Image 1 (spheres, one colour):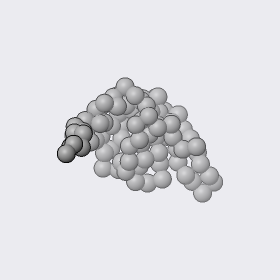
Image 2 (image 1 turned 45 degrees about the vertical axis):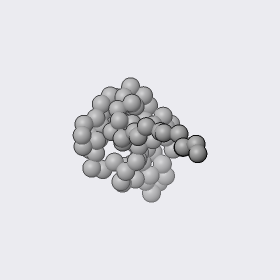
Image 3 (image 1 turned 90 degrees about the vertical axis):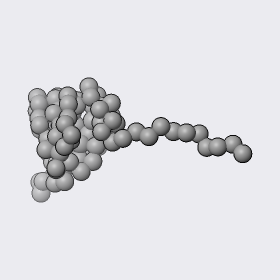
Length: 88
């Protein structure tokens, strides 16, 4: 009987660590989304991004703001999308 191929487990923080230096799309718990280059993070998934575009849904529609650098609180992060380009 042939066994199923063994796939090494990848822990969530290991995946985030592999994204350092790459573009990442961050969805927040509120109506904000950020796309930028991940510079670093800590055990609480607080993140530092550079070359950032912030997207926000407002009653007037979607807005985008360019930022040089930002620190995101890990408590407010809902989802991370490695290589993401942001909302279309």
